[in-house]
Amino acid sequence: MSKGAKFLIKYRLIANGIALGIGVGIYLLLTLLFNIGDLANVWPAILSGSIGVATVVGLVMLFVLPRRSFNLAVQFGIDRNTLWWTDILTPVCWSLLITILGLLFQQFATNNLGHNQGSFWIGMAIILSLFFTTQVLADIVALVHGFWKVVVIVGLPSLLMSILIWILTCIAQWMSKTNWTLSQHQINQIEHLLTSPGIWTVVLIVCIAIMILLTWVFTKMIRLQRD
Amino acid sequence: MTTMHINSLSKRFGRTTILKDINLKFDSNGIYGLFGRNGVGKSTLLNMIVDGIRPTDGTIEVDGQNVKDNGQALTKLWLMNASMPFGKWTSVTTIMKWVDAVYGDFDFANAKRMLQEFGVKENAHVGRLSTGQQTSLKLVLALNVNATIIMLDEPVLGLDANHRELFYSELLRTYSEKPRIFIVATHLIDEIAHLVNHVIIIDQQHVVIDDATDTVLQQAYQLSGPQEQVTAFGRHFKVINHSARMGKLGQVIIYDQLPTDLKVPADLTLNHLDLQSLFIAMTSPDMGQIASAQSTKEAHHHE
Image (tube, rainbow over all chains, first blue to last red; front, side, top):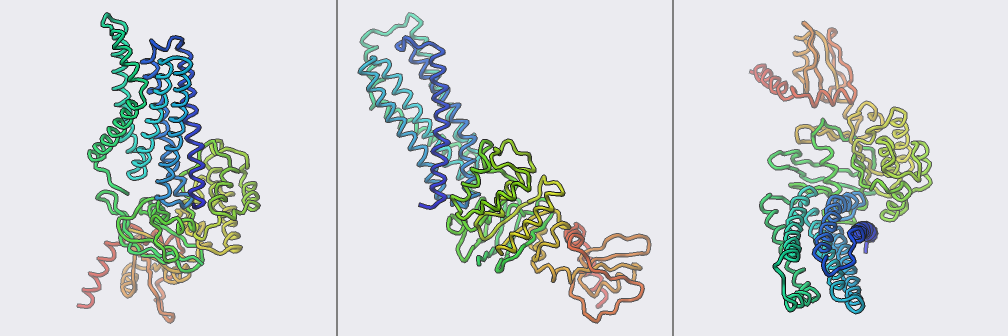
């Protein structure tokens, strides 16, 4: 491995870690502020809140890290192939770490705190993993097409997806406040689905596929050229 | 020593051609001056050399290796330009360590001495430095990095006169201690003319001059006197510009090899031109029209 590659990996691991720490910190602070004593009733708000925070953190990362990495790579004579794989590797590492930690905590929460707490934590893990995957796509696009276009190509789909999930969670919250109630059987089924790793894996894959598709669509629409 | 060849390089942005068929050879150590008017493509050229942006056509080779996606070739290069690639919370010391980590053999002792002379503190963070201090930091990095081709794009941007002089002396000192290829792109031609031993001028998408400084200056003349005599005498040589005309007086700029035994009429004055004046004359917009008019007159003369 070249000195440049080692440098870039170390730099991105630290930078991603700091961004992740800020994002998680903000998320936990908001969670505490909004008093989540009874998680069973507030999971939609927590889920949407985590998406919102993750989106904000991710957009900050989109603005800063891909361009910064690219400029550093040019300054330090690091070729683009090295930049590509280190750029993909570091967010994926963090993503895997977060997912593993999230799943471990989910097990702990399920065993000790009940299903709702578990679904809350696995939701957080999945959302952050999705978020870092988004960043990987953002980095790829940034490298290929130039920085400002990343904001349009990947930032916009991220926001669209966040809005979609907001709408869904608002519907869920509305349902809980109206007379349109679910039977206990239906609630148990939903809880079972929400705590199923298989379901969330499918959700993650579908989200990634949508992101790739939207990225491709926007790329074609804007007629970008590889520099 | 390291060599660099730029072969038939062209760059288009959309429908706009910035550079066309650029051919340059850097086969010997030296301080190369890269000059051109605003927007002519100097920075674009330097960015293509470090693979920051990709050329539309052509190749750039360092020691025979294409720089495209070639980390081994790219780590022989260092570009200092107006951008600041380091985050504002990064300290000067950290940056020097990063440079050493990637390039190796960073001259910390000399860098620290230079930082002190430029008034930049080692523990300062980038965000706390003024524009001039950031430029000074980038200069210190460029003059102490272990690269064999150092490119400086507008290296004195934001520097006061004292620090500009300091930079010029440090550049000479660095070059004398460790001869390498330095390429300096600047608008301050007068200030750097005495340092560069090779001149490259880009104008209207092409390289118009690529020669040793002494050779360039030996061919640069200003001919002045009565307009008719200036025109008559000047038609025998390569006139690149007609400058000021006051009443019956005329003045032309000649860029040509003149015979050593040339006899200049008594009414005319023939002087050597400095580099900046030559640059202005060569890149002035009326150069093409003058050349065309000159060709027409000579054609009529021959008829």
